[in-house]
Image (tube, rainbow over all chains, first blue to last red):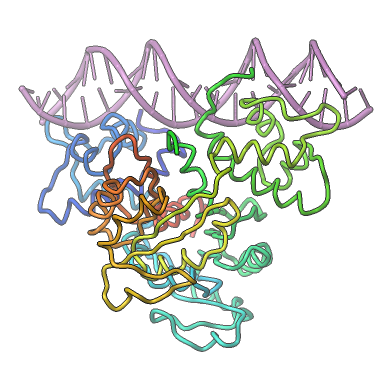
Length: 207
Length: 207
DNA sequence: CCATGTGAAGGTATTCACAGCC
DNA sequence: GGCTGTGAATACCTTCACATGG
């Protein structure tokens, strides 16, 4: 089944696999079986094989998958093969935490610009990134930045998204706990942290 | 179809509905139609009606849903009808951001304790919560805390989860970018922020 | 007339089981 | 023997269409 559209759920898991592959690459092995990778990342081995089957034959029966080759392919599919430059809007507690977070580098993602509306913050440097006036968002395009991260209060979220869309951003990660609208050509992923915590009690049998 | 298990995907959406309902409650209306709620939260109206149908008849044909009654029911289903007390482990950038984040209160969730391993942080107060030595985790049970939030570096995540499980925590929100194991009676939700950003480029047509 | 609630249909994702290959 | 890749079976979720009720 070589040529097939990749299901969304598979795309969601690809970064997990990629992380697992990169980690096991540091341990000297050249190949990894779907079973070992399964133990590593917490996904069934048959699910892993099925997922990989959507985009080609990367495994060798009896041996496993070539770690480096597979990692490279996953990066290519996720379009992470080029370094991705992102801009952060909103340098509050959460924004500052994101600037300090080393995890983005794992995927070749880099937050290279930060914007805020608060004059007290503008001009300061947070985790090596200088905070700029929000009116300077217009410079994103010429700086090759097409990913936006929204970490502003709920009330400012739609306005911020509109601005980002206006300056050519193509993908937005929104941390504000609300629905935001954007043209279809711009992909928005909303990540509401409180919501995740909120569904935890449902799964706690009693008490 | 009155008595039916609620699908996981519906449970995932319940907090969205709850937020929408609480917000529209502040606008004076007593009832809301599935169509209006749909515009509000970004979910189809038929999906909303189907979701609500899993746990009872709350709507009145021709009128809509009673906002207060429905919100109360959703809270009950999610077990958010009692205030939930959570403990945070790891008061770094992300942990501090979580302590300052007002969004948890929306769902009746409250971070009432914080722990860290760094002597420089212990004893200090962050957003009104005193940072305690990690060895004091044993006091959670008597303080009625059964939710844990893990915001420690990857290398300390499994250790932290083990500790939390040991002191009777029943649900864990893990921000460390790795799989963590826990007994089946403890529900773990892992939220890897970088992973969400990592799948964004896939959906960006070109460039 | 308007909006809910729900069977039925359609689509998507997961799991299984095993043929095929190293 | 070990492990991949994949059709088939199953489970799950979404969408539709409309009967039912206020």
